[in-house]
Length: 182
Image 1 (tube, helix red, strand yellow):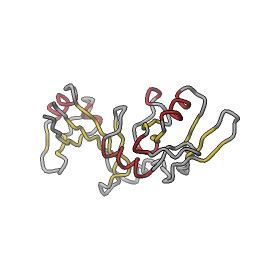
Image 2 (cartoon, one colour):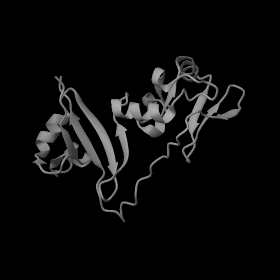
Image 3 (cartoon, helix red, strand yellow):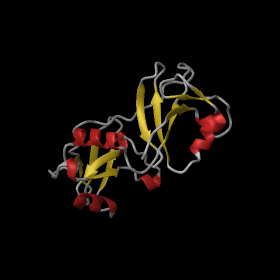
């Protein structure tokens, strides 16, 4: 069976540039940095990056794989409701989850880069017949083959998170290492 172990660790520790211990998700246990690095190289390890504010509140969560977790997918289905194309009413529950900036080009697997598209509109976007983007205010737009811009059906804005001033807020963004074994 699969199981998950949540570990908070700095990127420097994972890279071997620092020897700060990892910590258990609840913050009660310190974990040997060498052990954390060993777990990080084990097949089946999944990374979820969580950006936190100075008080530990989550500002942004990024999946470091191509596909969103069940929880992120469920939240986006609720947020989108339907295919993101302006005139399409296909239920988001029956669509593909698509990266606005493709994963192959460095597009992150997070809410502000994911939309739901029915197979037809997903195919048009993949073949370059339609383009799409999020504006800095979180609104989502399509550019049609005629050059016309049209607002998306995505009804909840997805604001792009910005990093707090690290000089002002001395906190370390955490990487949560989740070890999944089957």
